[in-house]
Length: 397
Image (tube, rainbow, N blue to C red; front, side, top):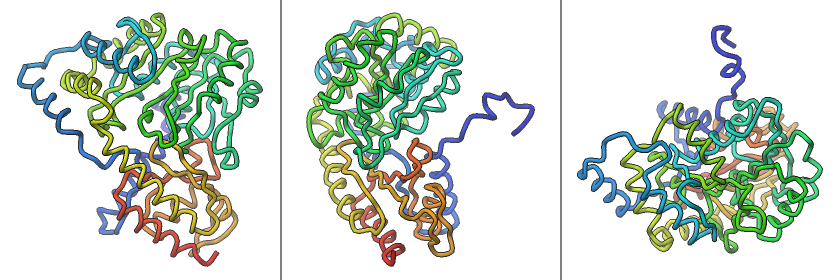
C-alpha cells in the first residue's frame, strides 16, 4: 500500500486473468513449456473482410476525432444488429459506442451508482464486475450458484438478495467464466421478480451471444416490461476475434445513454475511428461469416469436456456457451500435490502452472472459490496436451 496513492487505487485488486497471463509469459520467456489457457481471447485472426474495411478507412483518411458516442452510421449498424439478432428496437440516442464492452459497463456503473448503492452480481461473474462496482463507490452483492446448480442462480435467490439499497443487477449470458446460459424461462422468472422493483436497472453483458451451443440466445431486454430498464452490452472482441481493436457498445434507455455519453466525454472521448469504420462492416455481416469460429469452439468444447471428466476430483458442469470450462476443484483443498499444499483455487492454479506449465485462472477472482477457469480458445492439440498433463499429475488421487 503506497500512502502517496489514492485509496481508490490501493484498494483496487489486480485483474487475476491478466496477472496469470503475465506470470505465464514470464515463465515462457525463461524457456519453460507453457500452455496458456487463462485468457479469454479467440486464437483466430480477425476476418479478412473486417481488416479490408479498416484498410479502406485508412485510405479514406479517417484520422480525426470521432463523435464521443460513435459515428452515426455505426450506430445505425448497431441498431440493425440489435433488431436482427436480439429483437430489440433502438434509436440513435439510445446507442453509445465505447472503447470495449468493459468501458461500456464501467460507464453504466459510474452513471448509475451512488456511494453505498448495491449491485447484485450473480456468481460466478466476470472478474472486473466487482472492481468496477467498487470504483463507482457501489457495493457488490454476490449471489452464488455452484456446479450443482449449473452455475445459474434462481429467481428465489435473486428475490432474497434485493434490498432497499439495490440499484442494479449485472450479469453475463452466456457467462464468463462458467459458460452457463440463461434460457428464456429463467430470464422471465428474473423479470417477474424485478417487476416488483421498478427502480432496479438490469445490465446484461451479451458479448458471447453467438457462442451458444444449445439454443437460441435470448436478451432479457426483449421480454415484456424489460427494455426500458435494461442496458444491453455487447462488442466485437469475441465473435469477430477483435480483442485488440477495443470496440464495444450498449443499447439503453436514452437517459442512461446520454449520461454514459457525458461520462465518456470526460474520460476517453470517441473510440478509435478506424476500428469504428471496420465495425460497421462486421456488424452488417451475417452471422454465417463467423460461423467457422463458432463451429470450432463447439468442437473444442466437446473435446475438453471429455478430457476433464477423466481427471480425478474434478466436477465439471457442461458449459452451454462462451469458450470456458469451469471445473470445481475443491476436492483437492487440504491435500498436498507434489509438495504444494492446496488451500484454495489460487493455490491450485499456481500449482498447475508450476508443475504442468498449464495456465488457468483461479475461481476466487470470479466469486467462485471452489473452481478454476480454463479457456478452450486454443487449438485442439494444445487443449489435449494441457488436459493430459493435468491428468498425469493428478491420476493417483
